[in-house]
Image 1: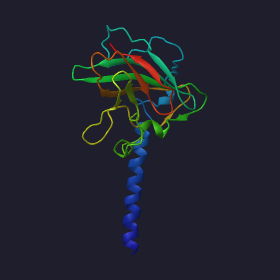
Image 2 (image 1 turned 60 degrees about the horizontal axis):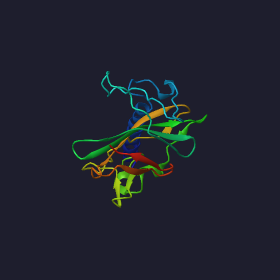
Image 3 (image 1 turned 30 degrees about the horizontal axis):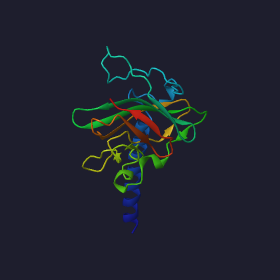
Image 4 (image 1 turned 135 degrees about the horizontal axis):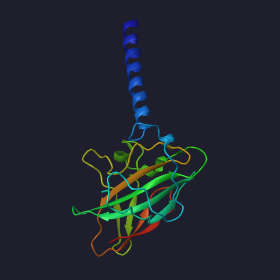
Length: 193
């Protein structure tokens, strides 16, 4: 019985090391530095967003299209809404904490679908509503049920922000605007080109 207990205890210690490593990596930015060391970014008024590394250097940064206020000082600034040739619509933006203390991203933003929720906190609960076509579009999922959106969201430190994206099926070409909805955030109307 003691040998079996020792094996279980040893296995639990290994799991604890792996979980600790995951939390450490998740707490670092793409450059390996802790997120708390990044300069604060707020998006309370329409402004030019910082140029991301994925944009070509000659391209102008996009303007903020909408700012949605959420709970506990969280804000979502939507920077672009782009139709892709493959029939997708990609919404990109920045999730910011405008408060003076860290704020956890609410679990409700993941939605309530079991297949999406099991992959961690994401923006999988976001939807687009085409009121003219009377359709609601949900965030796309891959074959494993993972939402095609930013995931692994946790606590956003005071003054910090996270670049986010969500991918949806594209509404018909004649749809010129949709209502963007994300649980716990106010809705916004987005123009489509």
